[in-house]
Length: 601
Image: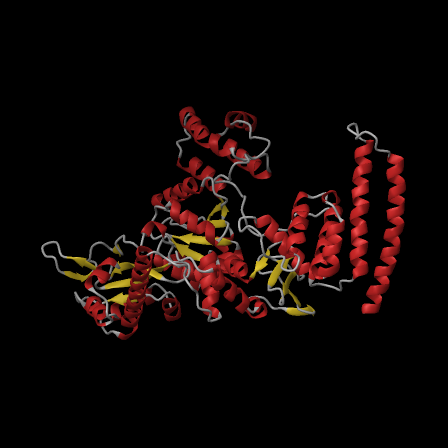
């Protein structure tokens, strides 16, 4: 992965037009000055709580708490990492990126990789053109149409056709200036067993480009068109750019929809994914087989926090779901399962039942833990005590991860009913659930996830501290003086204190100087910066909020002085008199702030 210069990153940030960027996904309305508001793209809401400051180039949602700069916006909405988002924006705003100085070996490897990616991109274009323009590809077009797949869908996913000749790709690539070694290393050619000559790896096959989340083609999955061809499915061989175990088919097309929906649908095959997208389920991806790898689970977690498994209902598909749960253990993923009829895959159902019915099946997905309990009961021999004991043994670790809840009670009742045992006995056999969910990491049955959710309620004292800090940003001159007057003990929240310390040194440019790993502080500073651009800030209002901080500080001292561990030589009476003085000053400051606000209007 290339490393770009800090100057390049700053040029990209400078070039971003936040109203253009955010406005392409969110309907924005001016709310005053350089501030705009709209409905948050990260969570469902009816009243707009999403705010953009065009001048500061920041966004913040006061409903779910998400916020950041333009790069963070693209990361969240498009499902890209930092480098991917930077390159996306550089391309959008035509900003050249400069790579940090590299040693000769690193530069050579990067240039070689770029050559292979260019070759694969040309190959995808060649195969797609062949599918639509070649007479030989007519049977391929007929097959795809028989699966109910429309031309627009096939073109979007760049589905193609590899001709039956032994050297069509080889010759086309040579004409484009690529060497035999590059063609072989890209996985487009292979060597004969008896000779050292190379020839096209893919022939007489429907071609499905396998791309990364940014749409760069890394390899291909190929389906045989004739019954005489073996194997039925052939992939690009493992090489320096392609690793099948890391791939998710369609992730480049699905990433934005998955990020917005907070969920990603996982199907098995290529046509399943195409059919689901055509049915309007734009957050579907494929695992190209039944064995889900840790790398694929990691990729899924980067797309969305909820994974909906729509795998075939046969034994292999159900085993794949269990494997997915084992691989997902320890990651913050919610796994859900779509009950599918035995013998039917999503592509079949779209054709036989229609898009609406399949959408309803997806929406009716069940938590993985319910699927696991139902599967254990369905596959067990419950005719005797031994079989019932085996089911209990299988389900005991499942229930050990479930906290006391309605779902636990329902599943426990289901087990008791199927085993024909008293529910109290079943509860005893399964073991008592922990009263607190383990803090380490979520389990396959966990519903924990990182989806945007309503922000944690903020206490009154925290609101006062945040309002004060936002006003300091809005009025940097008086704000710097106010920050110098207040001490660390004016902040009851450790996070707000960190923000105050940061702003004392970076008030002119609040977003600078924050450690990239300090997500908590970065998010708060973004929120404060956006707040600073909303409403009218005056010196009188800043003074009033400073006095609010002082009042809160004294209140904390009074509470401490009345407690069992009261500090010596602290008089509650003295503190009460000091509080009365500050309260009188605050009342006067509030009157002055109201007058200044009225004059400003």
